[in-house]
Amino acid sequence: MRLTRRLPSSPPYVIFPILQEEPVVGHTLTEVNDSPAAPSGASDSSGDTASGTASGDPGHQRPAAAPAPAQVTAAGAATAPAQDGAPASDLPAGLPEGLRAELSAFRRDLHRHPELGRQEFRTTQKVKERLEQAGLAPRVLPAGTGLICDIGPDDGSRGRLALRADLDALPVPDTKTVPYRSTVDGRAHACGHDAHTTIVLGAGLTLARLAEEGRLKRPVRLLFQAAEEVMPGGALDAVKAGVLEGVERILALHCDPKVEVGRIGLRQGPITSAADKLKLVLDGPGGHSARPHLTTDLVMAAAKLATELPAALARRVDPRSGLSVVWGRIQAGHAANVIPQHAELEGTVRCLDLTAWHEAPDLIHEVIDQVAAIYRAKCEITYQRGVPPVVNEAVSAELLRDAMTARFGAHTVEDTEQSLGGEDFSWYLERVPGALARLGVRPVGDTTKRDLHQGDFDLDEGALAVGVELFTTAALLS
Image (tube, one colour):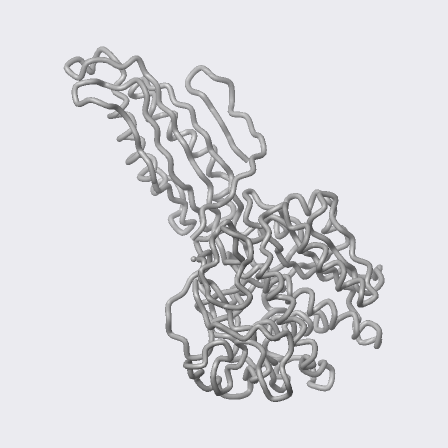
């Protein structure tokens, strides 16, 4: 949302929705073979982390995988005895080779055909068709992009466990040299949403089979959401469409190129931050720089706002909340001896704490009012909401930890730091408990520093099987 206020004579600021894409940032990983299936003992993906050569890069020798009990096999399947959770006999076997190959091919198809937020019609249709082939009844959301699919009948004693994926790509050119490179100029799955979609699809196919066998005791909802990259996020559209009705808990994964494949990063409490935008427009009569006392010195007013607002916040808010303003643009004037009539400042407001984020607009407006009044500057404030922090609920975070431990061993769960990036999964958590984990996608032994939102982003496809088995196990343990 955008909050706009003209001072000092305007009425209180008004609130209205906005649609704006986040700026993009970026990543590269191992080139892999594009074959939709692989013969027994061979890898069709960059999940070949046990030994040998990456199939798409004949000269690149892959390092050995991490030691047992959580290895990612050459075929991309994560295998380990169950530990500290459900008995191994209660958990399904690792993903069949045929399903692993199908999921690899499905993810690569999405990667070739990226679609921006609220334009994911092809992606939605592909997911819908595959779920229908499995005998399920997916429902496309009212906007025509995004869908939900229920597995198992409603249970009057407990709500559904929702598994969420996001569908959209980014307006970033794909710079990789791989057979599944984007076929759409200027667009790429540079954040791993194609993997998120594939993982929830794979979990749904697996859980549907378990439900047929009478082994799924908890009803599940698959949620494929549009427009995660479009602020303030397609999650709000999904919530409005009723996707959380009957949902008791919600889980999500997000690719993390800093975490090695076969592992997840997890924490209770905030795991991402809020990121809003702030714009100030100052106006005054202008004048000669020899007589600043006879006019409004907008340059001085802008300079004071640029320094006093961040300083005041540091003393008005608990520093542990991480509430901060950082300016990215200040513009005023055209001549050295002329006091300008117009000045502008733009920056970002970031916050690590949910309560402080809710309080931030009123506090920031108050401080700006006070500083602008000293210099008699008229100030219009545009405060543009992004998304709140993702705050992992303790029980949900422990469910992910228990599932990962039961499937792959306790050593495959690592503590992770709170990111300053935003994620619209947070909107769901304002309504139902849930948690998000960071899914390791970095090839074993790769020490290159990588990031999301870059045109060379790719992932070790062994992570697909890890994500599917993690979600499947969580559904069985919940």
